[in-house]
Image (cartoon, rainbow, N blue to C red):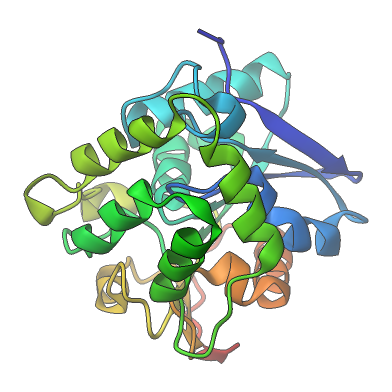
Length: 267
């Protein structure tokens, strides 16, 4: 078993931005977002434990062990403060990393994050976990996206390649079953979220069919919130330019609780 998760690196600049994908995906989904930010920051996109080239590494078994494994890798790389960006399950992991080691996190950008409410479309997540082949994967991505969104070919191809790795499909099926026990997901307590004092920005698709956007209503008041109109759950694929701009803006903010949440933002 490998000690640390795999990460692809890119970009150059004074900041370091860490990207954590959602369940069932891989680091390659961030391609377009990273291309927009490469001239201004060092970028690392991880394959989460249990996914892709991190299929056999420390941290498999849920968001908490994954958070510990990625924090350990950041320490091994001798990185200072980093900006965390996480989608869905990756959002839950990023949040747990910020709670475990807030001194390491300069900002937190969460895209339809997991763990912010018990409701989850368990059937859809399990269907996605078991999907094989381009047709099934494309159909699942479309089902998790907004009504007018088309899954990008490069994302479908990357996920297809990942799922051909021996043992990958069964690992995803097992993870999905554990994540959606009793058709609910685990929840990060609101009292813990309120302790986060780095800049936190949350973007949530107004048409999210996997994690209901109403979960954003319980966010601490100092979190900045974007409702992404006409978008579903797959914000990285549906609106990469908007995601890059949200990340850019949040990495430029300073820690403060004086600003009210932002209003709706159209994609």
